[in-house]
Length: 172
Image (cartoon, rainbow, N blue to C red):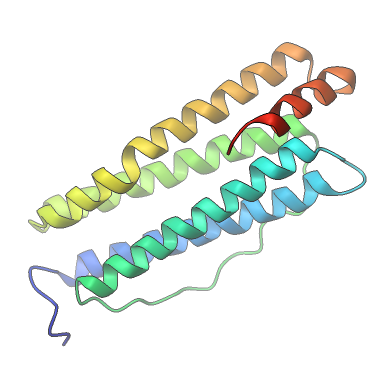
């Protein structure tokens, strides 16, 4: 047993490992989306940049959880990831997939918080609240706005091109 371990249940440790996998899986999906958007068949540099930045952000989230698990004296157990899809029907379907992905990650984070509450672990609850929950709400809002804007311009042709060019200008 780790000398650092205190008030850290096996259920909490397992829930953190599950969340690490969830974040890494999300990163893989975003990386695949980035490759798809950057392909010559799509040529959507704004969407490629957005997805690439999102992949890096999800990897950072996983690393924060790994660091937290180690600080608390837990054992990090990485799991195999599923191969993400490599093709999407349209930019709209790709961005809609990310909205569901972020909602799934948010649900998993809320479950992690619940495990912290059930195991009387206020430190875990504070960590999840301060590092993740508000950021998830912002990500869901941002992607929802992108979908609304894409729908407004028609989702293909010149409208898609202009939408993608605006996305390229944004900081991610």
